[in-house]
Length: 537
Ligand SMILES: NC(=O)C1=CN([C@@H]2O[C@H](COP(=O)(O)OP(=O)(O)OC[C@H]3O[C@@H](n4cnc5c(N)ncnc54)[C@H](OP(=O)(O)O)[C@@H]3O)[C@@H](O)[C@H]2O)[C@@H](O)CC1
Ligand SMILES: Nc1ncnc2c1ncn2[C@@H]1O[C@H](COP(=O)(O)OP(=O)(O)O)[C@@H](O)[C@H]1O
Ligand SMILES: [K+]
Image (cartoon, rainbow, N blue to C red):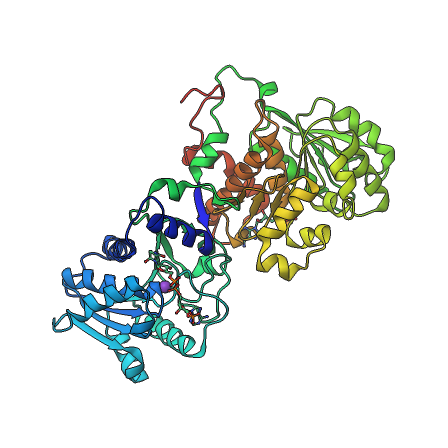
């Protein structure tokens, strides 16, 4: 998985690399950063020879990187137009050194160096329009707040002209105007086609709207000592990758049987929401559950008979929704279950709440709780903490807001600290569904961010499928930890959505079509790499 840092964590690493026992001179890190941009740019767009490149250099160290980039581009035969926004005296020592080196090369016909303030706007527009490439070295991890008027005006020009003339923009470390910690972006933030980032990825590259503005992100370690780059932060965040899932979705032993792969109990559905139960059950089947038993109120269960023969259906009670009178029958049915998915389509009757609380109290295996199951747990933190079984909650933002009391806007702006507090206080692993989906362990320490999925999944029932998948992966023999199971399910669910988007089109595919893709993802993505007993397959 990819480690994701905040700007402050990155700064601390930079400091340690320069001042601690490593003693790397700051000019060297900046040199390597600038060189990295030139190298990665060439790998995507070919040789720089003969290209006209505009480099906008801000007043901080991001601008310093720009001066280095200019020198290396000239060495490769590009003509550079370097526009400086800062005052020479205000630059850091390392930026000033690189600026002076560049100033010493000013006579070179390939070098055009100018303070931006001395240039009329139409000239800037014309120069951009006649360039082959633009380098955004205006602001990197140091961006905060909103773009100030002059910077905003410049960013608007760059975006407009680059878009119109189809000129690629390479962002140095971060596109100007994107917050490296949260992905929050100024409305005029620069839209890059590629971002070359240094040392460790930044969180804002994986969170919308920043995620959309960074383009292709390339990481270069710029010669920083690996122990610093690998260091586990107290407040750590990771982006999920296919390889992480392969650790969990192991190959089956050839002699395994259905009992080996877990029995998932689905407690879901009510008179008007039968589909939710079936979609969760299908999610469990497609994610590899050995057996799936769906417990559904009798009144509606009759309609499911024969629909999905692979699912065992237990018709429960006499009411159109579950009540506490049903808990005994349900407990009988889940005795042999290795995990339970509770909640999709249960409805919001007060009587169902009593039922949910009884299941929570008596269950003898891990529980994944979603949708109406979570609705019934509002204000029930103590009851949840008393539950003897490990729990995974899978709310979307509105459900999380209802449960936690945090405002939807606050969750959208910066969910991570809120999720950590909630997970610790409620002692549950939490999956905050959305774009992107976050997974937080019950200790509230590690946060994982999903990298798969698309807007075609914004459709009723997709979450139900996920709930069944989490339960299936969590309920296997040698079952993974809650967080691992949640990460694997979320990643696979999103990857299946991406496969649907490719096969069917960007939207309009159904939750069951998505569920059907799960085994194909395991196959095509070669996710399954190991045998259950740990042997490499
Ligand atoms: N050794 C290292 O550390 C290495 C660092 N490296 C590079 O340094 C970068 C970090 O450098 P940094 O910390 O100097 O910040 P940076 O991104 O240049 O931004 C600060 C400037 O932006 C301005 N500004 C901010 N917000 C603004 C707004 N809303 N609207 C307008 N202006 C705004 C801010 O103005 P101020 O707030 O100070 O008035 C200041 O002028 C990092 O991303 C990487 O590229 C590499 O060389 C590798 C080694
Ligand atoms: N724009 C999007 N990008 C990626 N994933 C999305 C997007 N919109 C929805 N999803 C995913 O689809 C699922 C929707 O779940 P949910 O909101 O609970 O739907 P339902 O309750 O109807 O089943 C979640 O896993 C969510 O992450
Ligand atoms: K930048």
